[in-house]
Image 1 (tube, rainbow, N blue to C red):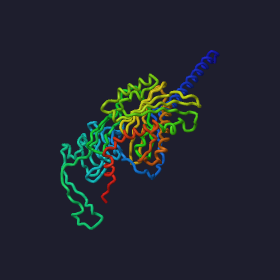
Image 2: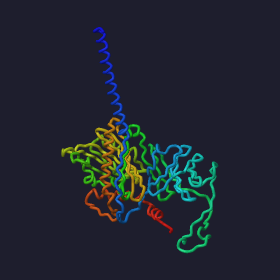
Image 3: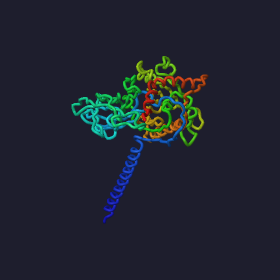
Image 4: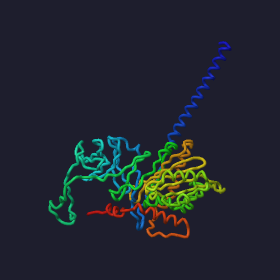
Length: 450
């Protein structure tokens, strides 16, 4: 072989090896990025502590206030999907009809008590069929209906004798006819927006909604959905939203940002007032002009004469303290607490913009799942927003460690010589409006005939 041939072969062999090396590096990069993307792009974190068991809570307020609550996401409720929901003392069958509309009815079939949400099927466009005996209920009206004509169906009503189990009864006395007529399940008002399905849950099934959840489609178009954190809490439901009015607890519960070091501290400045306070804008005025401009725009957009009385407003500054240096402004959160079950935290910072949407699923009297859904600026790395969700969950767990083992202060005391206790006093007076009729409803839920 000539010298020139050897040089040509050597050249191409070296070049081929170089190409193969680049391809391998690119393949490894794609693989690692795919794993990173799958792990952090839409991050989920759950903190579920051990149930503390029985704790003497003392005299408490009603277990479940009235308002709008998230009962599903739009994505979860696909066409013809049926879902059993337990929320705030209500047992609900949620389903999406053949017409694409979401419907919510009282879950238990009055025929034999089956839960329509477990094994029920969608029929005739808007109806749910009981899995036990095939009784059919129209989601549009709640009526028991017959066949695809949706004709209201008449039945006879019976009741068990209350003396059953206490004395001998003849067979005719065990079940007594009380009447006949049409059957109607309670129908829950629903609102589907921003990818969530909200249900209006009230002690009085005839009560009409008095406000609406906030609509934030424009924010979803500007910010990117980053994931959700879940904290399970074992306490009275009021402890969770009360965080907004308890401005003093930040000093003691949230003074450090990381669990394993005191190098990163936080100095908080919190304010709260009613949304219908005539001095709201002045009380919430921020010393940084661009932050105040952002805050005032939120007030213009979301507060009006129809909903302001049902919204509590908080302004929260977080100033970071690194290695004991002077506090440096990091972000401000303008917080709208909409009724008892929805909280919107609009964060603005020199570095990013974000929205935390907090909603709570109250599954039992003292068991609640608190969700924080994060929307943030597109340029924030996914691993960083995952860390933000994780740290948010940690801060909530700091609260929950106290909530889970506390009694309920039914006869609280206040140091009225300072702003902090006057704020929480005003918050509790504001929040009390959401308990209308709830004490009676609680008694009905816990009543037993035998």
